Amino acid sequence: METRICDFPHCKDFNGNCSVPGQDGLPVQCVGSWAEDKYYFLEKYLNATCEVRRCFTDKGNAVFIDLFAGPGNCIIRSTQSEISGGGVRALNREQAPFNEYHFYDILKVNIEALQSRIGDNPHYCKIR
Image 1 (cartoon, rainbow, N blue to C red):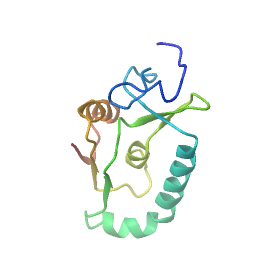
Image 2 (cartoon, rainbow, N blue to C red):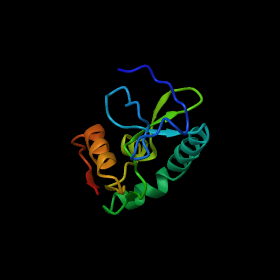
Image 3 (tube, one colour):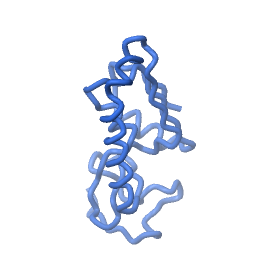
């Protein structure tokens, strides 16, 4: 794997992803440190809504939708650390999981990377 050197905004390729692939060799999005806050609050929300979501999960209609899923992993520019995106975090939850997951992205390369990262998940996943 290449040594990661982020020279934002020049690190991005023609798709808007980082020109250096992630640890698994797949595309990643280069993001600012704000992403850590964003995912912190997503995790807080997912934890806070576990019991309410469980009521819907039992009926089969708890759905997670990510309209801007990206490739599933991100690189924090300032630290060069690789982290999971919001959809991957939601999908990997064990406590009160969703019944369905719908991931969308405009770039085929991102959809392919996300599909590769999540693999065959026991939950119903639609990736488009």
